[in-house]
Length: 187
Image (tube, rainbow, N blue to C red; front, top):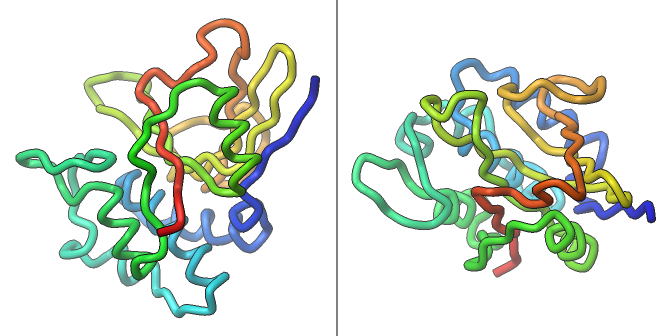
């Protein structure tokens, strides 16, 4: 078996260039980077101007600090779901369901043509969890190859450029994201 699934809008050269430009912003938190990239690609497709660089630097919109997928917690910043809804002018949000298994995420991406925001641990849990936008997967019998927008935390398993990483994971040993993923959905 060898099967590719991709969120086509985010699997383009122009989307890759946007990811590179966002990753070049110093001191940017991963949640805002993921949301702004999804929004920048979506808004460009819709023909809506979107000044991601200025918006990301606006701490009233994207304050520094930890955030959740979709819940308000004390000392946490605006959750990713609300930020995505705001940044796409009410067109996109995150699914209420959280997905874990690679195969399920791959199938849903193939069937819906939409990316996922994945929460993954950093090298040290003291540094917290990290958000990336998964926009392409390649599944074989033994591996799950993840292509994701990343603001620079992870070293890519394949030669890529800043803003885009590839992670090769076993499809047989722990074939899931322990902290889960949420699908981007149209409102």
